Length: 231
Image (tube, rainbow, N blue to C red; front, top):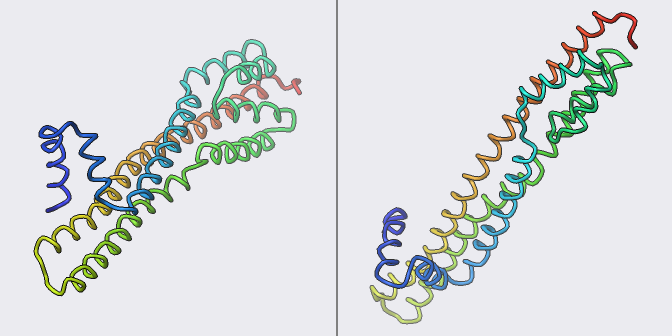
């Protein structure tokens, strides 16, 4: 029985019995003790993924609209008004903008350094927890394979104790052993989907920060060129 055949059988078993949840619980119980590390990996991994998704969604803003608003404040009321706009806006793009504006008196080079430094800090905040999510993506199938190997050893021990190769004994032992691998792979697939979604969202926010930083520096250069007497 292949992995995909087992997945196709789950809805059929659910229809024949009480439901998909009961089928999964039954399979989980058949898998033995190594199903618990796989389940723990899934729960912790999902918790990290949901926390990152919520945090990134809160950090995501309409960057183009924000840049236009900051530029308008710069042109109309100067640096203090632009800083106030950044302070009232959430997200890493606004934080990077504010860090650059706070160093405007020190020159464009200081603004560039502040933007780069604070951008690195914000990026580390965005990527926080991903290393643990990646860890559980790797651990889940490992626990599954370990459970399978242990189950196969126990199956061969049963064959050795019985002194005979019974088809039902061999098939039953191997089926139970392979269940840990199946659930470990399913867990890894689920967590990998969330990991890729999170990394793609982080990449887009980082690109927005880089584009916003360029816009900020250009705006400050034009502002200083148009107002040579301004500090």
